[in-house]
Length: 154
Image 1 (tube, rainbow, N blue to C red):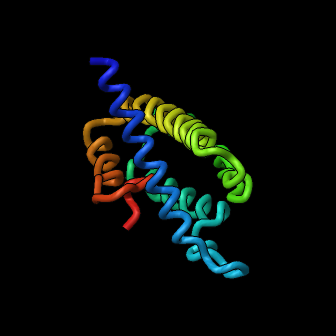
Image 2: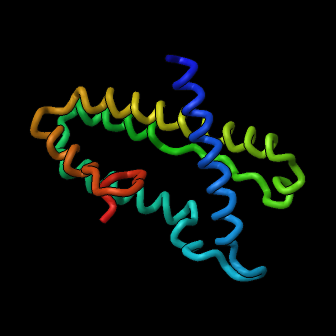
């Protein structure tokens, strides 16, 4: 059973990495052209949006003093460190297919660890909320379809 699950996971990761590589190659902007949405995805803009959203959520939750301490710990734990830089395209092209796949897998493992850490922080904070506050928190992070990092983007 475990071998089948592992084999299925490896096969899925392989398919994703091959597909993502071909899509990335097709989606490359013309040399010298700015990447689409590059300003919206800048780390500064993303940080500003995250801080604004956190302030709005904090206000909606109406936290008491003990919860506010838990909130500060939560925000500190979920604050993203600098995202790992994706490998340089030219460097990746020099690698063999297995080497590229190893790099992609390592990147995915780092992403999984970041998500695991965020989950633990969220569980700890969620546990100090009242049922009414949990409803608000759930609504703010409601699944709206598609991949969303912070759920509440509209």
